[in-house]
Length: 502
Image 1 (cartoon, one colour):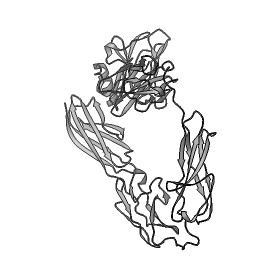
Image 2 (image 1 turned 90 degrees about the vertical axis):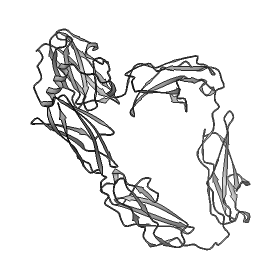
Image 3 (image 1 turned 135 degrees about the horizontal axis):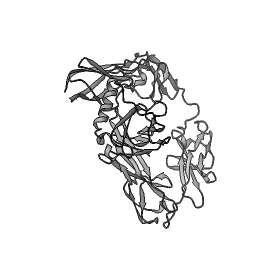
Image 4 (image 1 turned 180 degrees about the horizontal axis):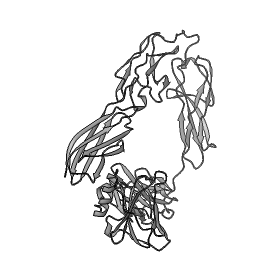
């Protein structure tokens, strides 16, 4: 049995559950259960179906009497209540960091919780799934006739909960998504003939998703099955020298299927000047570029063409020699070397009349993949490293590269903590948001001093908004300190405020 509750449908626990949470917050002993011979065990997963360590699990008798509390372990997300007397019990699961909770099994309150009946010596397994989105309880279905021209209609199945959850649809042909088929209905077309159709329903809330897939339909009948098309996997190429009178050779490239028949044409502009795999350049080609066009055909298949990259221009014999560019001043980097900022490189100075420039940014002397433009936006991966740029100048005579002086090391990005704090009756509710161009790793420590006691909570750095509730506090004017420790790419931040706890 899997369970789920979301942040926007979190139930209010009973008084006994509130006392258990308060006791855990301030370190008081929990009541012990009787030394019987029965047990209840289980595993708790969370959004994405990964193990959920540190989840609060509370056990009650069905009559409402609190029995015991525990937390799931860090390796398997497992919990266990042993030494139980025979009887009827209910369970409550809560993830305080994500504000997600529910009663077993998939119930919003204690009164509707599913009871677990135990006999002496019995062991019952009660697994839980605490998702922040919505859980599919009954799979989607597809209705309609599986024939070209007919319309299939999807029902999303049963999900819990559904408040503030957006449901999307994706139709699949033979298990492969159909482009643009994202409505609750789908009209079958020729391309579907001979395939089985299904629909995937996706539940979305605040960027998190859960999905469920329907069963496939019968094989779609009617229509005209699609004709397969020949595809070019490697374009044709031209080899040889650019001097007029040279013999050039064309490769047809590679095609799918491999047994397609390929013919070759030589082009000067749009004019066909030859056919076949070989061509000897003429004086009419001087100053022009040549290309090879390959055409592939096969019976029962749709044909295809592909064209080589331009070759040339063809030059007269003994053309004047051009020397590659020479660097006269190294390129320079401008901008602030800090995560989130942008560095800009100039080309430096060159002799030899360059006709083009290329850029390659480096981090600690090693090339940064994909960083080949004059501007570089600094990322968390750049923190602490020296950044350089290699500029390559080229002309008809060749290419030459030179390297700038390094900029950096790159400093960490600034960070800002935005916190709202609201006091209540013996409790405090915090909403935290951390903004930074850095990676935002590290920890956030929340410290509350009130009534002569200090309560501390340590959280992973929030990605978006994060809510935290502290219960069992003493009344008074609480000093709330929230401190982000920072990481290798982000500086620390702190927020302090006094809030009244009733």
